[in-house]
Structures are given as C-alpha cells and as structure tokens.
Image 1 (cartoon, rainbow, N blue to C red):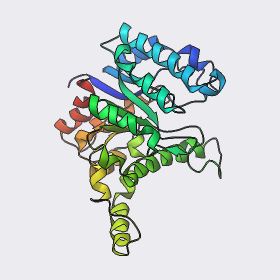
Image 2: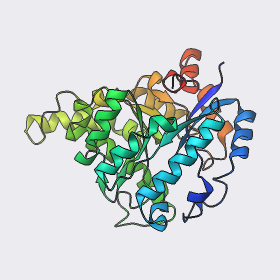
Image 3: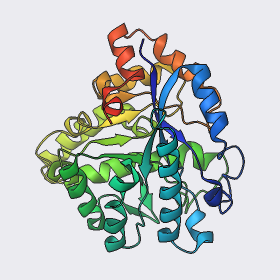
Length: 302
C-alpha cells in the first residue's frame, strides 16, 4: 500500500499559539509530528488551522493570517514532500480576503481553509462568493473546518464537553446545508469542498433530507433545488477527522462514493491515530477502496 495521505492534521506556529486560549500545548512541535508520521507510515499531511481565538489577542484577522500563512509557508518550503499547506483568510473584509488569497500561490499554499461559520455568518454569505469564483478558476481545494468560537447552539448551551462534541460538528452540517440551500453548490459546482468530521451528521440524515424535501416541495414550502439534497452531497469530499468507527465510515459510504472519503488523523487533537487507520484497514470495504481512502488522489496530486 502507498504511503498514507493525512487530509486533516494541525500545526500551530508558536507566534500564533501563544495568543490562543487552548492551543498552547503540543500544537507547535513539528519534530514530534514528523516522528509520529514516520511511525505510522503517513507520507504527507495537510496542515489545517484549528479555528481559534488568536485573532482577538493579535488585534485582527489580517495580522493572524499574515503570520500564520507565512509560518505554514516556511514549513512547506522546508518539508515539501511531507506537508501540504492550507492558508487562512481575513474573513472580516472581502477586499483583504482576496488580497491574501492571491498571495497563496507565491507562498506555496495549495488549499483554502475556511471555518464552517464566523460569528454566526455561514459560508453561503455573499462575502465568500469571490473566494469560490477564484477557487473554481484556479482549481483550488476548499477545506471546511468546524468552528470552535460561537458554533451553532452555543448561545443556548455552552458546555466544555457538549460544545466540542455536538455543537462543533452540527455547525459543519449547517454550513453544508446553507451552501446547498443558497445555491452556492449549484453556482460553483466545479469547486471541490473537503468537509471535516464526515460532514457532521449528514451521513445520518441523508434520507431525511431527501424525504422531507420531497414532502415540502409538494406543498411548495421549499424552493426547487433542481436536484435532491443527497445529489449535492455526492459531489462533496469528506474526511474522517480521527474517527475510529467502522460504522461511521460505512454510513458515509452511503452518502458518497468511497473515492470522496479521505483519511484524516485530526492530529494532535486525536492521539489514537493507529485505531483511526485501523478503522479503515479492518473495514469490510475492498482493498481498492481502502487504498483510495488512505492514499487519496485528490491530495496526492497537489
């Protein structure tokens, strides 16, 4: 089997980590990350920003993005065969977003990393449309990571366990749903979206989406989406985000073709990467599909 490609890992530059509440410990040790990759046969990892509060202490999204993107670019430059860089954007200013995005090529950043929402503003908002147009024109992958600041439901329940377990992943599901309902997935159909955490609850509510949509269309309660919700989901890509469940994997295989599922370790948040890999290797999928998930051509070609 070819080396594993990790579609969901994290590295937090120290200059950013020190300005966060949560990510000060174990998130800036690149040598430990490389050692872990070597031990587990992970050939290459996509480095993603674990949405944080750093921009608050750093004074602005612009300053955060400049420092973070430049640091990730240095990592990719130093280890081009081991890491793929995903850049982040100053989402509070559309003009600044586009200026920063146009720097990605020079920095060697090949993926756009977005959170599922920003202060309640989801990715269907028109401020993000130029990003999608740029990604479509330049064939750039967009990764959608769960939002950790004010995710859906936190205004009613803020809990140190319930928020990360439930609200983070529900925010991802709602983000995808709003991309569909707004027409973004139709208007920018050539953009490749890579959704974290199996899309949250999407694999479990696929049939409910289709059945409810059909019922509401008959009563004209919902607009014509041009195709079934599940057909939109089939065009998306999903990463496993450290899951150790064969059942969750197989459930997602009912949502999308296995070629649209990518292994993701969620390192260093997930310390049990061996079992995350084993959940794929030990599943009832055939060897070709297993290899596709662990060594996906979508990222291998970047």
